[in-house]
Length: 293
Image 1 (cartoon, rainbow, N blue to C red):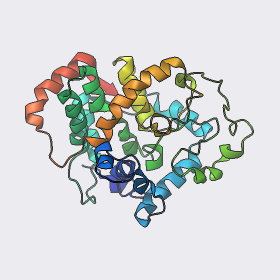
Image 2 (image 1 turned 180 degrees about the vertical axis):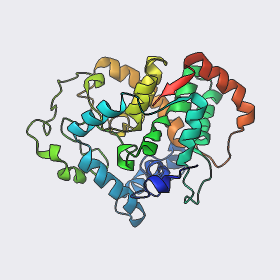
Image 3 (image 1 turned 45 degrees about the vertical axis):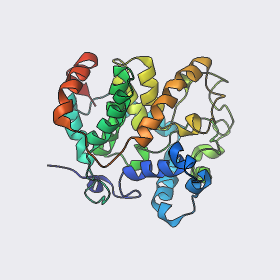
Image 4 (image 1 turned 90 degrees about the horizontal axis):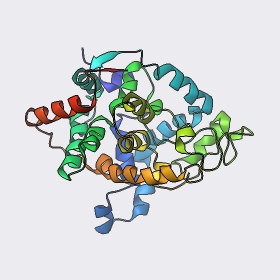
């Protein structure tokens, strides 16, 4: 029986897509800017229409602590919840279609196909196409009972001071780590330029899908998966002091991927019947027959 998103958790967002729509307001298509729209118009956090997003980030910033992230990784990265074929996994993900959303009836896989097809159309390597297809697979966390604020949202380091470049930074005052004598310092538990692989980011679908795929895809694809929601860095450049030279080099791939993630959606669904042979061959090239969740 299908499970719609509103049955998992309807508030504070009407659907997970609402977070992505908010991203488009904050980081609009450069072509829209060229047509005369001002970037400032997209960063008006006081508009009433954004109340649900504001509440989402209030919860996110209150509860994403260092200890919380460590605990969630210990729980979910055992991958002992479910094991499915790749295509059954997409059907599982498709249960997140929100019947209350009046703007789209595209399921999750169709959204992912739009991303991967845009990447393929531009002639990028096939492993990048596969990263596009899988980048939101971690949203199945909602189907395991996780709240929205622990699944989506802009990601950020925990265990060190929260940057004022993170969306709605004022809500961090409610976070227990905010006044911690170690976690509230610039470097916190980390060393300068230690490298992002040593940094704990807020828990969500990025980290989950990275660990799901880390044994199968090349490193540039894994950076795309792990950091595609790390907007405080790849859009705001707020955490360069924790990155090493290798991170900066690899973030060229994250920057390449990001526009496909944000700007590839359209109301016309991909033709899965025509695309299926290509994607079946692509998945078989890189992935095992079943995936553990």
